[in-house]
Image (cartoon, rainbow, N blue to C red):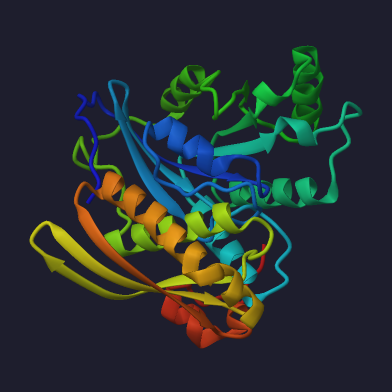
Length: 317
């Protein structure tokens, strides 16, 4: 299990949900807050498919973050299950972070329908369980004229009752110190529930599958969108070497050809880059075998989604 440098915990403890629309930078923010890459990151929407837990232990206390999929239209069974994971992550938390891409708020302050839907989900969660909520205006490093930030913050403040508005750049680190301070200031008193060097409860198999999927998203551009899944077929530990075989599943034959590449070049590159990152993250050697398979319509296949570990649900945010 991944661990981190030990720090003394002085008694603040709480659960913090990170929510927002796709591509708001939630996963990048989680990684930046933790000081470690835990959630996979991609420029493509809906990269995160389930809640990811990361634990931050500092002098001020211990915060347990839950990164969630971007709130979006539930047009497939997979998306409906993703939205249920968002709903579950928002329920009963001690603090909510609502992340907005600073570039998506127009100077007029009028938000799009998708932003309104996401804010409604946040509102319902707070109505069910009252807790503080912080607006995190992310990607401020991409706003050339910083004078535009204040009116955009004010526009969002008129639409929703946030406890504090905090502009940050998860990528550059600007504003993160203030955000951490604001988070711990609002967490309740409590004893730490995890060891001081604990980082996540994600099983190693899930970590490996997610790193492979991230490499696919980065290397294939728009050619292989989110109709890709990764399953670990075999895992054998032999001393300090883990032999892992994984299947990459796509929905179309054409996507299979793209992933394999000419002479197998693409699948070799995916495997090589993923293996290096896996070894760096988990701290031991891996022998990685990848196979590409076609499974038409897997995103609407309930039995297959259950096999992937997605919870069954009929509710939609």
